[in-house]
Length: 248
Image (cartoon, rainbow, N blue to C red; front, side, top):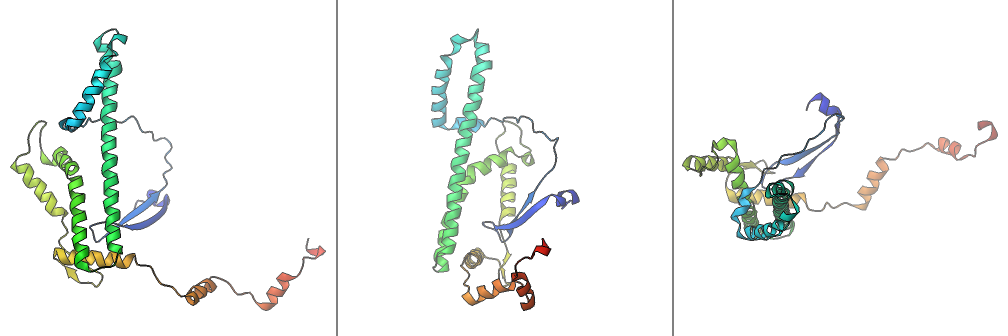
């Protein structure tokens, strides 16, 4: 970490990350830049929403409602610039925000279900089957969003309006292969290379990580006593005496 950033570090922690053998590292920084101002962002309209028939029906109804305000403007150009254009922009933004919120809520639900499966007792084959089903649901949920990211990335060298070709498909397959986990080292320092043993290693690791730690009352008492300093008897007697007038 840079020396300037290190001075502003307030804390760091590791959290569990799904489908990986690594922990995510979170670092909290406090920046003291006072003159940094963020300008207005730019909107990139998601025109793929127009491929959805329910959305087209909604925007047709809204368009008919907006057209009723044309008589309030000098001409149709002023109506479009001052009124309709902002309405269309806000309509697309609200629709995209609602769909992203729904997708995030579903992802959070599936991830919480994964942790529930890992915590519950049971044989590993049953857990592996449940984890595979949940993983398939997450992949299906995020598949359209991932495809849109792959098509819009500059790595594909795809011009506007061009349909994905065999080259684009091969590039997307290559990136997908690079994201796959081929080999991990489990808690016993053994290398696992098959999908079955990798999923079993993950299930075992998270099951042990989230199990409650048993503690004895005597051990807790000893731990508390380690943090308390013992005061000598002669000093304790002096401290318990009342304050005299000379000490004021």
